[in-house]
Length: 358
Length: 177
Image (cartoon, rainbow over all chains, first blue to last red):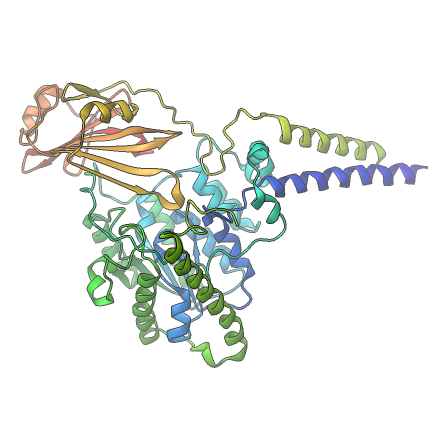
């Protein structure tokens, strides 16, 4: 009798837990159409083989470097652990998280995020943190990132945050309840369309150009983490000019890099050398590169990597070649689809913020 | 054990009920624009008057730009992952920037870049630091080559070069968050 009561109690408990779990899965944003950036962080865990180069940072990495070009031209295995407005502490904890799975030879960090010294926005936090697997790194990343209005428990039980999405559910929420499509190419976000750069407004004058202590403290932690793990760290500033990267900030990074023996490249001044033409190589008037630009950027950067680091050309390794040939195919297929949409409609219809659910 | 199981089940049921109904449909549930605590109330503090229009930081920008007429230049760009747009209106030596709050654009900053305009207190680009102090008193803070005055939710910042004002900015405190 006691056993029967226990079993029925257990059954009720498990049933309720299953309902809660199901509701949470259903109600959490899927980020599969339109704003796909929220899918980027979790995609990393689907990688089958380790990488020798890992990028961390915001859109200035995931939209500006084609990982497929790095593979095709140099046999470099790379991944971009990027996410929208990824703050430097998020980059640190995402790197720490990645080191649980692999130890790359080179880590590349884009410095624009150092302009932010405090938590900024829940929407961006969610896109960077919800996709992380649970670990001490995720818990620390949440604590470092939360704005005043957020609470830790909402990250532990996202249902508490998203319960009111009932009325907004779309076909994507059901279609991708248990499986998601890849939205990136080893972390690279593809856009082939072209919108020439015309000009930017004058940068805002700031009261103080000193990069924040909190942000720089996390850069210290990234530097130390790379050192502890024998990883070469490269600091970069992507070649795009907006949001503005002030000379005063640049000078601080130059000094930091010298002090810590790190290479630092501000690619804004190297665009001619890279071969970038901002009338054709950007899809959003100069904020980010399009695929043509990202391929040029990757080719240029790949040459530097192979000349200066002991990286392996994996193109002759059958295991790697098999995995990467699938990535190349997916990349080329998406490229073809995007060009076809441009030809037919004059703009992309399945990609970008205004994409229509398929 | 049976009691424990009962309690656990009840707690789970309570969680389910709370999670699904607690806030009903009135809460902002937009995944990409979660609720913000910054509010949209027009800020009290320093204001700038331009073409007969009073401009305060954190105010709704739509009626302001409508009253100001066509700008000499306008720029907008999607922010990362399309969380609103950065917008900049230029009217000669005056630059207005906005930030999104819900479905509105609020005034992020007003910048005075040349001497064609001045603050209501009479300070313009080219005024001396002493002029600034005479009009506004001791600054709330100084950093690098700028002095700032805080009143209400507005920070009025004077950038200085060679002892002269090189630009003036009315800044929302959103910028300091």
